[in-house]
Image 1 (cartoon, rainbow, N blue to C red):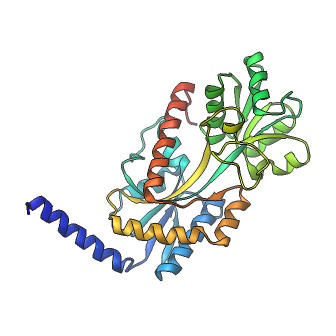
Image 2 (cartoon, rainbow, N blue to C red):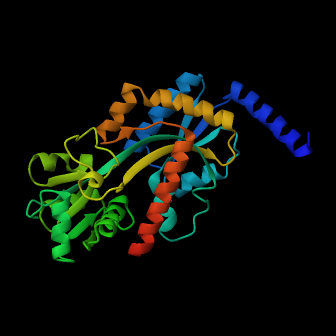
Image 3 (cartoon, one colour):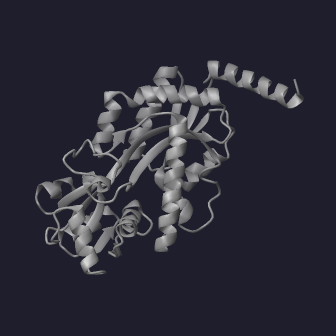
Amino acid sequence: MKLAGLVAAVLMCVSSASAQTYPEKPVRVVVPFPAGGAADIVARQIAQGVSANLRAQFIVDNRAGAGGAIGADIVARAVPDGYTLLFASSSALSINPHLGGKLPYDALRDFTAIVLVGYAPNVLVIHPSVPAKSVKDLIAVARAKPGALNFASNGPGTLSHLTGELFNLRAGVKMVHIPYKGAAPAVIDTMAGNVSVLFAAFPSVTGQVRAGKLRALAVTSAKRAEIAPELPTVAEAALPGFESTQWWGLYGPAGLPTPIVNRLNTEANKVLKTNDVRKRLAADGAEAAGGTPQQLASYHKADYEKWAKVVKAADIKGE
């Protein structure tokens, strides 16, 4: 056996042996969001569930700031031994890398995918004064009067902004972007009729839709949302292949040994099937995902490349 092959075989045996005894000390799960938010709560449930399954401590460490870059950088620089993990968002790993400014890590190369935790679609809502009962109607109105319709967002470079620009590109329309400082003012001005269209998180508009103050047309996920199964997806309603979701995934540093990745993936998938986690996600209009590490890696890469094209085509800059 050649030296390189012998070294590889030895390393594989060491990794397999390490995985059998892993974890032997507390595992740090870096969450790049403030404590108490929806993503933080889900991260803690995943950490607690995996901790119980493996009978080891999984300690959540909130390192918010710079759109998730601070926490992500900590993990990117960590030793790939399974004792430092990242509860990442699509904002940090798919969107922010394209908004200008050099990040201290490469979003695709500096992490090892473990499992897709969950995703939350936006819902496409319009002010009732807009003469549209469907996504096709909305596109027709926008095409008939270019620039007459506008859409609100939570701010430049946010998912709600990029979703609107993706809609413009895919539908061949030009709705004008009106940025706000957060979801609440965007929803309020859409209800007031100051803007026509909004791609919003479900919890921020559910009550207004039920009260008839906003009209929901579709969801932005690849499949219909469990929270509103009566709504079609944008893809099935008018634009095949359209998808835009906020998603969360569990990652380790690049080079995390495969046996450890697989063990964490197995235990996380078990947790994601529990009622407690599924209910917590559903409360925020999100759904549990799961699957293999390879599926997360592929999903992440496709999402990253999609937003790179949208940011470039729409000349979007971050705040």
